[in-house]
Image (cartoon, rainbow, N blue to C red; front, side, top):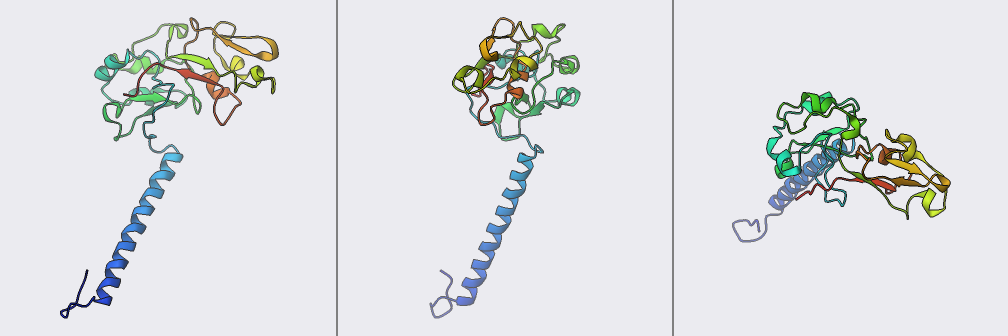
Length: 210
């Protein structure tokens, strides 16, 4: 409590203190708005979020423990990326900070493999043939896929697949079947999926966020 010499509250001091508090709140709110806008526009890496699909790393990534130990956070893989799909985790993400990842539903890997050629640490090892890449495996949610739940006819995932008729084949109404032994996990099918609220086909990497 702010008081005068006689012990009664000083109204002017209270008003000034309240004004300073409101100003601080206004500045903080403005800062949060700027950061939020930057994240939405892709200027900052998104915070790490728990996901059943796991962390999707670029092609040629070592197994997760070895990858995290070997990656020197140099950003060369992101700079070499043809499509700009490689992002870097932000400073609040602990041991993941500065390491590359991909959000396939927004921008998938086109398997140019340039990232594996510039990596100086061996955390992304060179891959001679794109068909040998193993970033993860695409899984289809039959409840969401319009070709499987009977609400439409699509085939976008099959069209986008760089190994069509090997990694993804089609059945009745263009219903997709993923063949795990051939799927490279590039995520082009996920990016192309026409289901927007939650993709009907998603790449699962098996790499933990923990």
